[in-house]
Amino acid sequence: MTIQVVYKNKAKSGNQDVIAVFANEKFQIKNTSDFFSKNETSSLERILKNKKNTKENIISFNINEKTTVILISLKKDLKSFDVENLGAVFYNFIKKNLFKNLSIITGSIKSKPGKDFIGRFVHGIKLKSYEFNIYKSKKTKNIIKNIKNHISRGGALLGVCNGFQILIEANILPGSLVRNKKLLFTCRETTLEVQDSIQSPFLSSFNTGDCLNIPVAHNEGNYIANNELLKELENNGRIAFKYKKSSEIETDYNPNGSLNDIAGILSKNGRVLGMMPHPERSINSLHGGTDGLKFLTKSIEQIVG
Image (cartoon, rainbow, N blue to C red; front, side, top):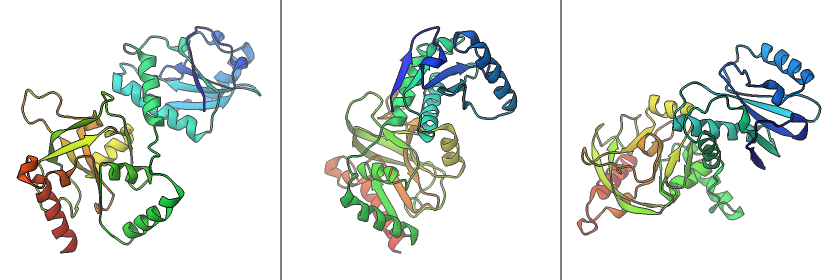
């Protein structure tokens, strides 16, 4: 897949295989003649009339025999995160539809909804397109198959750090883990707050609001997801831990930039937990604390019975 950003006010559609054009919430485009011929404009108006009540914010259609047009609707008062999230949604859309040789026409932006709009939009694409493939090979297929069989039988499973990444890449847990926000490896102590979650052997010995001091050590622990998934995780009690401020003046309590300060999530049945912090590195007072030992011991007791 090749994505080209065209910083021009004019770009005729006939010169591109697929072009992405920004529109307002009603899919209206500024200066339609800059992008489409009269015949194409007529076709566009006819197509959009049929999609008048669509709830989608990205649609596509063939404007002529050679060119596909993708319209991206922009809501008012978009914040930086909204723009990056829209970029991620856009990437999912073009990946699903197998689009190639794509050009994004920036000249169609009527008014920039925030500083460096296109930069943040492309950043959202890059974050969503990131793939953690280091553990993918023919040898791991049987391992993943056995893991999924274990889960399907109701087995409990804990994935820590790279283990969490594997669970996501294997589609056992949802979302994505990408490079830390500052693009640097981080190794430090963090405070985790237990969330109001579904029944889980990993958390049943703890109360909502309990805190654990557990270290992190990762380069790619930045958890991201679209708004729909974030709401699903929140509403269904599938967020196990969030990074928490240890004091009111602390500003860098979130070590990687994870959305909503998410440090760990659960499967739908609560028996699979993925988390970035390392409880196994907090089992001796010489290591700075024993909260990890407490967490692991309680979890094993609940699982084994």
